[in-house]
Image (cartoon, rainbow, N blue to C red; front, side, top):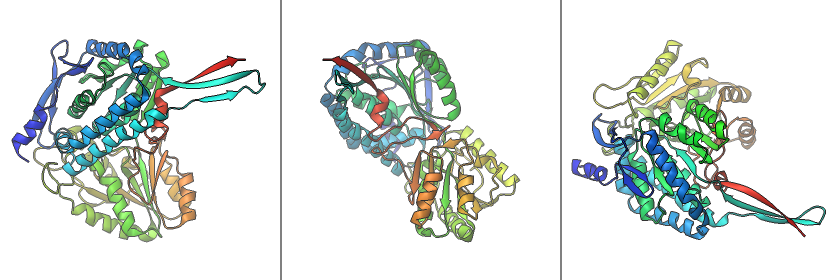
Length: 487
């Protein structure tokens, strides 16, 4: 990949705030750097919003809400359809942009653009399927008329690990429902969202419907908007700790919330599992996005009779993964997002080995520029190790043996999180028993990837509230109104 090609995709993106359909500088003129995590070099600077910029964005969203709510559902759907087509047409340059700011390999970035675009196509179709109802009152003297209306102006906060897809997963249903938005992408990866704002404007989204605020002061800019009272919904994807704080803030004005928070996904392999499928699924569930995903397999529980074979085969696969800058050919293991991420993974692995875990491959960071950590497999990991209770967010696979089905389920559920669990077995009865017993909002049964725009994504316990995607995804942006009709 040439330097001119890389600089070209960065230069093509707006670097200012996108408010009221226009690109505007931060009111105080401040900017923040965007850094390539593979090299540590600055890619560019973007506007660094202040609280007053956030209020301006909310002003624009509020001003646009009434007219946008009146727009025909078909027209809103056509905007999303055009945006889908533009995303797919520009898949290569958008993937390169994402790889430069986030670090994931180009092949994964291209996959994310396709995944992100699919949310627009899905919700383009859902826009015209917002339903209601008509019924006779039980006593026969009146009628019930049920209708759905947009919630109103919304606040959307997205993470750095899937900088395009986490945006479209929220923007898609908001547009389909008729809600205006203020969206704040992560400070580490603002370019993908800024590019998306340009695409939506090109697709015909009215001015003020989508407002993008990039900032290094997330709390300082977003808390006043949450407490303002004019926004009626918050949708957040990020850590459970931040989610708790946002819930407290939302309570002040009783904002409707949907939250996709942290995960601690168990990956269960029973002795009767198809071992080829289990190892392949483990690679997908662990190494997608370099392990920096809330759906990443965080704990591998393998039945004792096959634990050595599984560990050996997984180790062979992990050892063979090429590491490097995501723009390089055939690279699978790119950099982590920043040095803090490397430090955390290093601490978790050291804690596990201090408690008796054995390193089968990897186990350390990499000297030189960039934020790299080796693909790692640990075995004999005790249940009290930190990485069985904390989200790793890196390319580390800790393996622990189990003997019985009951033991596997107990260990899997021994967490405050409940986003996704993975189960590999050839026994249908066992599959159903375990899937029903696992405390998670999603189950990957003999497959290592669960994310699909047509399915409801979300967790239970401290992994979040509400669902994104599927036929229920648009409901998060709609209010139900009941009209009593006298006869």
